[in-house]
Length: 242
Picture 1 (tube, rainbow, N blue to C red):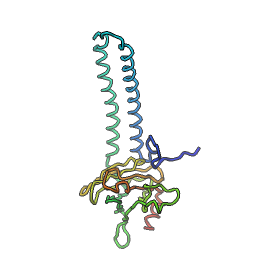
Picture 2: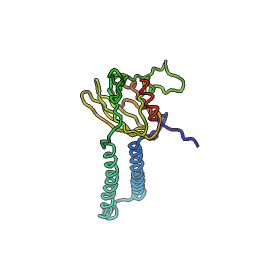
Picture 3: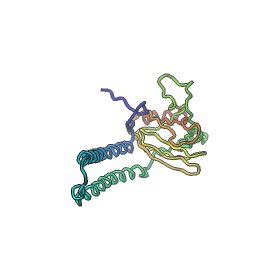
Picture 4: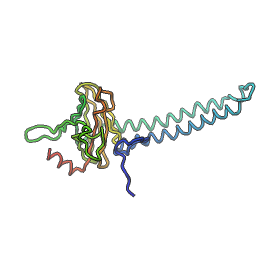
């Protein structure tokens, strides 16, 4: 059975895209873990409200010892506390794993502009001492090929190898932007005069789509991000041809 990967947004999509990094898998698990308790809380609160409306709709008065009590107060105070602690421990562990400073093998510099992205690979230098760098612009609708994604495809993709720790150094040349790619679990703001970083480890080959998720101006929607993950051999060939 062939599984269709969801590495790009779909119309009427109501769930996450397929994860391609450990941090995105953790985010998805945290969501499912939290939704389990939310479903239980919703059922319990709904049942209590329905029971109150049914049992007391014709009552002339309500006796305090029939509808209140120490045990009831303890239950609805301690139970939410335990649920919050469980969710907190899970989320704290995930935050630590996401923010852990891994030793990256490749660094990709990202600079945001109104309204395009500039990428630089400082680890790769040609014979002239020039670093590998390029700009990435959205492809207009008039130049799209059949099968490509409108408002998401770019003229120059970011190419990275799989199974490698990759660090993205993020900054901005003007206003605040946000570098976001859902399948990779990336969402990091880009500020002018400040360098943020995020480290990812992509576990499978594929093409992953994202966008600037900060309202950065009139062409905010024209800043897509396309990250193509290939094998290490293909990545080295791509670098050599650049």
